[in-house]
Image 1: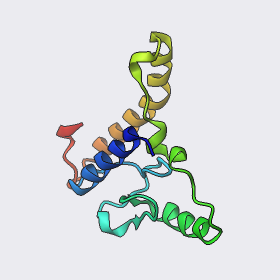
Image 2: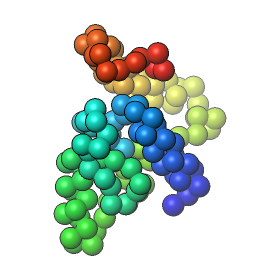
Image 3: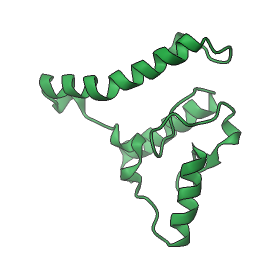
Length: 120
């Protein structure tokens, strides 16, 4: 595991422990439960993952074929923006970030009493 990946995992753990609602680090879907301890504990990283990923990790462990850390959604987001051209960056922002911002807007519209959107 690279140093950048280790830093990313530590950052995710700190964000989870701070109570921030983030997508599942393994699959990237917005399926994490609000109560952190109601999610599955990953077998390969000191993080919580969604229930489906927890079950998938258990099944893959039974066959000794874990999903490589590089295939996790949180690791795919580790990009070096300084090396990207403007066109590549714009394409990335339109594709990935637009979906995230739409989900965030939908959650804000729900006006959940449990979330504080000032950090976003």
